[in-house]
Image (tube, rainbow, N blue to C red; front, side, top):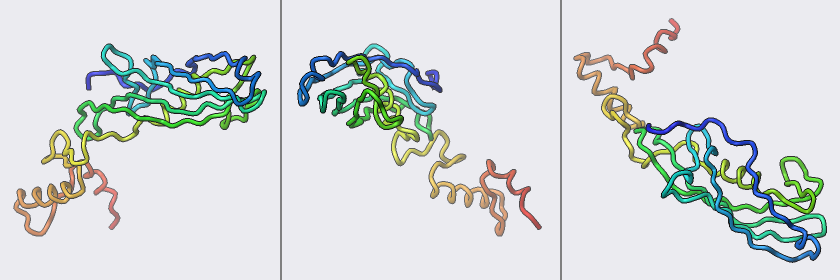
Length: 193
């Protein structure tokens, strides 16, 4: 691992959008496309990669529409380039997640369901932050058949574990007794009589 793992994310990401004209005429729309620097946005297993030269940025691409004089909707996508370490071999893996969004902004928001419309302005930052964090992968592997850094000593697949147990039993010369994975040996002390 060559990079510092993110364990927190910024509480405030601000992307204000003035909506006075939209609110005056219900049914009107406005296309919004923003490239966002999300340098500190991430989870413990993955983080947003649009932070260095050559990386793709996090992209918000939505249509904001007035549904009434007091509410707006934002419909579209948030494209989230991410990077993480494979949980088996620890090699860096990257990709892009696309989160579809359809959110409502209103002057009296319902907590956890809608976003705030204040002073004829909406802040798209919380929408982007929520969509990005929810779309990041949580258990990344570079490929489904990744065997890990030392597949013979520490197999990463159920089939590999069974094979490793059999190999250890044969290597010891004990015909009837099989040795288990040494990482679980401490649990053998918990077996009751």
